[in-house]
Image (cartoon, rainbow, N blue to C red):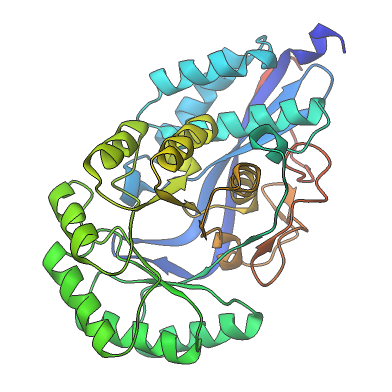
Length: 375
């Protein structure tokens, strides 16, 4: 292949927007719609790679305007560079935009999508050698007991058999909600996610109350504020339910601290916290220390969720799968010009075995607006 074909010809940024079937409500805040950004890299031979920046201001502090501005700056910097230098590009991005990791994630997705398309291999082969199916849980957002029961019934009928229940705003209400989900979903595993909403004492008491009700969760995620390391360690030590660090594991430095201090037995890896390459490093660090892994995400379209699925499938070391946000997006023919993936079925099963190259998405994005590079 001609070396010139490896050169980045143009990049562009476009809105990635969609309505949700219901507000995605957690202890930290809520999403009423999907308002993300797509980043597209086009190579000299016409190959296009796609990435997504999922902005979660209430969690990371990143904003849509900040991220759009940074992606537009990155687009200018990338034109004329060789995609084979993706490692150097990644290092530059992580240093300059360390406080805007969702922008880094979007660019790395696009670069690796384009590169693996050129190499004619699926993206998951960049991370490993074996393709396996992933089965995602489904989230029951914070709501009334009645709405919680309705959602649990709907998703159970749809075929989901693993449930993540958001908690962290009201202990008494949370107890009732978890109990009703357990009753409706029978013997399905239940994961709890407090999104920093409890103290250590509240968490331990809450789990004791659930035990009294005959409910034993499979996992509890981020029970305490992310800066409460002593509280995280205390719950991890005293709880019979495994604890997963999410917001506390917001960087490679955090992951190393969790390992050193034995702060939690499970870590949630999200592309929007690390980018693709550092997500792989974080997973490898945790795996080497015997820490179990969850693959998760923010409020993301099938684009970013599929990238996360490729990482998890390729590495083959994720015990928990939480890639369900596509099921909260109202059905549309395209999201931001990308058709819905066909290898994610209605029961939350990702099967990437038929992807021939790249992420396997079908692009229809126009570069006529917000583009940088040759016309």
